[in-house]
Length: 137
Length: 296
Ligand SMILES: [Zn+2]
Image 1 (tube, rainbow over the protein chains, first blue to last red):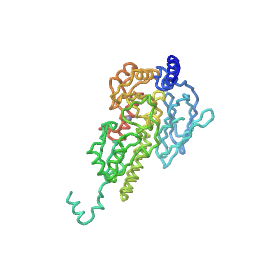
Image 2 (tube, rainbow over the protein chains, first blue to last red):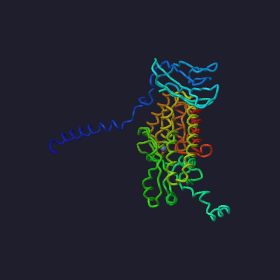
Image 3 (cartoon, chains in turn orange, blue):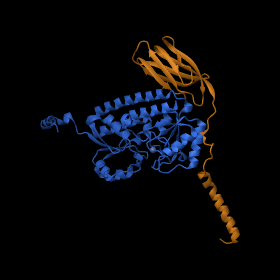
Image 4 (cartoon, helix red, strand yellow):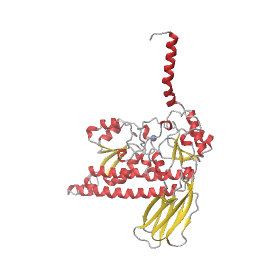
């Protein structure tokens, strides 16, 4: 390279600085307190209407962390409850059915709606009883 | 050989009584357990990796290679869990041994980001700890069933029945796990672990994993990384952090002191343990119980 030595030095420094920017961006430590996974998403509480329907009379029960458990006082074929939960991370539903007359392939349908829109529709099968967990998307 | 068996051989009835079991070598304690469940008496499993040992630090010895050369099937986790697998495959090629790689039967998830991961062992881009998803273990159960049937077609009905029985047990385990975890609020489903082995579990049950970088190796995590993690644990209000068999207690101690989080107990991250955790189902029950008790 020809030219004044100082000019050559300036050109070299500029080149190294430009080349170093992407390296710095890739290798720099993330500052404390700006961890993406550490940020708590803001809560958005919404009403979940949960309907349990049994194919045959049963004692039905519904529970979720932080919510009041709901249970049918006698045998019934349906149970409806409304839970207010965080829409970002709604809690899992624990559903139970104890059938009055045990039979093969008794069904328990669980439907979850938010503002009239169905967001979960699941059917569980059992004979004497059913106990399982339903996750809400 | 028992006198009865000698008599049966003499009159030609031995093959009806008991065929020679399929010889299997296993590079994973979890796969050993699945193989025993599916294979029953028709399979003889040699554990190359023993329960309680660290599979990441394992390298095949000449004795192991000799043993593997004498079997019909080798069971491996795959997805980069055994960095020596290709070399092993070529060194036992002549013996005709068949490799059954569990990773090919599961849908892998990506490894955690590099800034959360500092293993000394080599992992591919896929997370190789597939067994922390019960659904994956169900898929591998069917894979082993088919592999055993291919080698021993006479055992088809036995392998099918054994696989069905094990699948039923896995379904019970899966439901038990769901019910146990249902008591944990979603906001508390955070696993601070020594290394990033519980990604599949986290995906299945809505957990966030925060592995302590570098703690599973002789390298110390940088002080900046530890500070970031401490900050994150504090901001999320994490109740407990979990140890594994490969860990640096000094760093864990520092984190518990600075965050106020408790030590939540030991998780089986890289395979089976001993005692109650010596089976896949026992290991999962132990992990789930430890997690629920610590985070509830
Ligand atoms: Zn690992």
